[in-house]
Image (cartoon, rainbow, N blue to C red; front, side):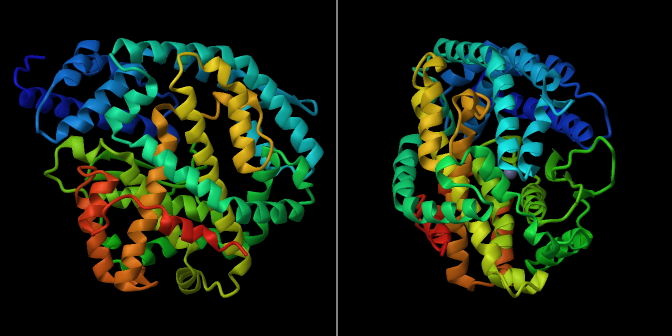
Length: 493
Ligand SMILES: [Zn+2]
């Protein structure tokens, strides 16, 4: 790397990161779309090895410049350095998760499929027994996960950070303490309505709330009673007409490639693969209908539209890197249409909405409380230098705030790197706040106002140049404010 000035260094990294990002995203796309059997990431990492070298990370950590790309590229390189350093253990864990299975009624169920079967099991006794067998297998894998965190914590300190919390908070500008305060208030305020709704839903599937476990709650959300209202063949037409109403010319948008073809190895879950931003964005779906599938499609379509509208001349640092609370927030903007009463009536002809809205609002509140609990847990654990003493703490915090029994064996399996839980929480807050501005300006049916559409397109065009808070300031909102989100889920009666 013959880079001398900070600008040359950032130019070089920006260019390399774009090539690396495009190559890995293409590989993920091909594999998850069922077009390619293997996932060959190692050759791509080898080709761009210099990006994630210790000296590159050090160089960026020392660089001082007003160049705005620094923030995003530094986070990308340091994150990539840690990921690459831990790769052997990550691969060993993935290999175990793929190879392990659970014995169930004369059959061996692949470890990663167990949760789906738990969710679909109507009998509470069988459901819990199967989940207990999953936990035994998880517990046997945990030594590897523990070693991986030992290793990541050591690398973190070697890079000069006091803790993993401080590394993620500093590089990601996540304001984790501010977020913690906000979420603690939210947990306190929503406790009562949440408990009441939880009890009602558990009794609805004949589970005594005092004995309820995580597996029972998964079952509540799998409720098939609304599936007929969300037919498979309506998914794409409804998405297209919703985007058209916002002034997006979907019939003339070659950059978003919808891959709806059936393939045996294709991921059942919708995803978005921004292979070349903004010109080659894949929206990959296997539509099967039902409200959760609709929500997943709209979420991924939100990512796809965001990426497709990013200005061509933005550097990669702003196109493909940065505060993921932003792209997640825009994904939630479209996903939230599935919670909007006038939208449901107009696009799905849904007139009797009360029962459905009750369930999905409860689901959202559950998610928020679960992620808030995960944040509290991660903030405690990642401040330490040994994860092993936090097994029970995980189960206690999750059980307390979600209200059903969680097990300590999941303490590392139910955990994403880099405080992704905080990104989601920030994205939910950002989206609700953004929407509250839109509703003030254009009313409850903002989603069919071309002005709202053009404001969205302008915000999209920046990519992730600005953080969620910086974007909100452009709309006249001074800070992240959880009030609009709290108001969304308050009405659970
Ligand atoms: Zn997303």
